[in-house]
Length: 386
Image (cartoon, rainbow, N blue to C red; front, top):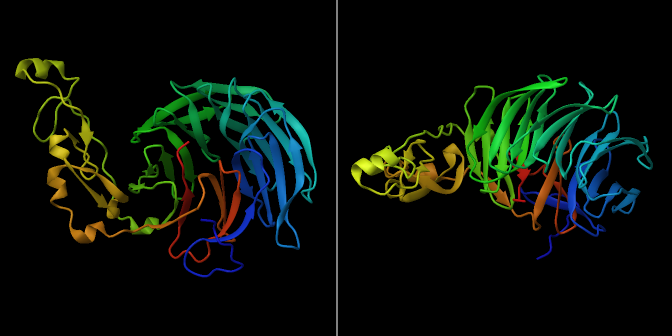
């Protein structure tokens, strides 16, 4: 069913204001232009387009530029009007937009990767462009000289990236489900830690430098809030919809998953615990984790599942039998509100000052939403596993 377009909000939910159509292939990124009625899009059809709102209320392209390879991602810095485009061939192209957004000039081409660029961030403070790619690496390059400063390789595709300008720390998500925290320097780096908690490839990251919180979304249909600043964290679960939730309403931290060679309830060995399997003449069991207490348990001791929104679990998750008995009916009251985006959302951008959100995806349609009437919305994210 087609989404209905309204000129003004009608209820406390996201309201579709405009649809932008015209791409011949999937739109991989779309960003709102601050203080302008405009959107920048990049697509698999090799085009970079700047759409401006006309007097008719419709968006029409003021810039239509074609590059040599499909556009996979984008980083736009509004104050300097610099735009960086990642491509399928591994290159990053920098352009400078004119003040009236009717012209763009090529500045540099950076040989960042040997394969598709998956994500990138431009830092004006350090004059770096930091990027990840399907060549299993993260690289950082100097935008003044165009030279490579450093590179780090992972065991699997590096899928997404966030960067803290003040401390020069990079968060890199990969297809194995891990998030690596790196401290970047000129021509050197150090690995700080690895965050483990997802059971599927990392599809999106978002860093809040004020509250020191990192949000990660993965193909296991989960979003995790990582407390980097030491204030307590939580986990929330979403699917291919638009989810809005208030972080203030999440008052309990999700537990750390514990490591063990045997079930911490019945003490039966897990399948890698060869010694205990031999001694007890039993077959090893698969390891699971209780989402409420974090203990390593077998399937028999964690046969039940439940929602637990107070810890962020809006959908049913595995818990051990002991924890299941402690969850009350009032603990299952939902804290998040869900709104159907009516298309497969692969990327989104939000302008909190104006209450606007833009979404795009493989259906080649870009949608602009009014979020001002969404009650209690402090986070808005569109997530769809890639």
